[in-house]
Length: 580
Image: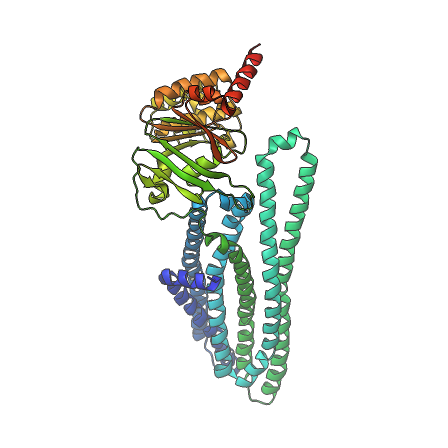
């Protein structure tokens, strides 16, 4: 969909606001073309010496009233117009946010956060200006041009009007050439601003790493280069936009020279009065606005087109996981996988192949295996971050794709290895899924996650702000706060993706003991490198290179003396050495 079609749809939805603004602009245009004609008549009467003082005062009062009316109408149309145009910005931002919030991880692999933030700010602002001020300025300029030219031709002298319009085709050609440059420069400016946003976002997110590696100087140099590039692109766009004014000035100066020469000759020959030439000169001055409006409108439209060309692909990007489900409620039940296979794009080997499992409700499944075995991939398929290429995943006898994404994800509490905390208080982060939870419920979840003692030692306890991404907390504290958040959510399915990797073994044992108490009636899937985290699981899958290499309970796997048994003996030996 083009920018003009988008604007057309918006105009139809908000036609009342735009129509009201257009009526106000029509009133302004009529008053503007009336004023020079009236001044011309007054001048002719003064030259003839037949204008009484009382009538002159009345004429001046009418002209003053017309000026006041023009001012009021200008304020009115701007208020109506901008209120409507801002709604387009709100609609686009809501649409963009809604689309981004529904995209899966695959979408974000090819896009950078800073650039997406730029789309939500600068790019949408440019589209908003194109739909608002550009449309009404174009209407106002066109209407004024038509009325002024009509009055110049029909109300004064058609020959002078022809002279005045001679430079216009050359100005139109200049505008066309300039607008092409503005479009290219605007697109480059928006792209470089997005790259600058990326640099700032990544640097702030990784500020600890930058400092730890002593990369401050290099980071500043990179930022300076990107900032200079963005400034150069913006200046380039501004320079080309500034080229509209000289084109207007040259055209107007040429038109004025032609009109004064031809008009002076007509006054000399008696074919035109001084008042008529005065009116025509005032009309000629009123052509300044339509000329500038044309350049301004073209500039705004080209900026809007450049922004829309960047924004539209993101808004229209297909969802990486389609939501065609119709079941809006997820009941606890059997979790099953049947010969599930998955292959990441661009990877030679499949991440999962032929994985099958059956987990009754209220049971715990352990997922273990070496790095890259497919543990996290299986959890992502359960979360429907991605869809399996083969086989099926079922919950309570239904394929996961039969459930709506909102219903499915509301029924799953997920704790990833890298826990994400929002820039809010500890209590707010724990109560994220249940904002109405009482403080007692929040503290109970924190105790189950073995983080209560850490929280009460913070400066403001549960009301302590954790900073962006939980920067004020340690890795282990962030993981345990995330576990408390998942437990408070009380979802039928709890997924722990190596969520205890940052805590010591003693704390891990406490959390696992608490989980055994809290998981009554709740299905739990624990993926972990530490086998101690899954030792009490009802069933354990050992994944290697994407397929199930071993399965059974802890005792059975030890008796089988395979990878699990060897890894268990190694980790137990390592733990005993650490204790010594």
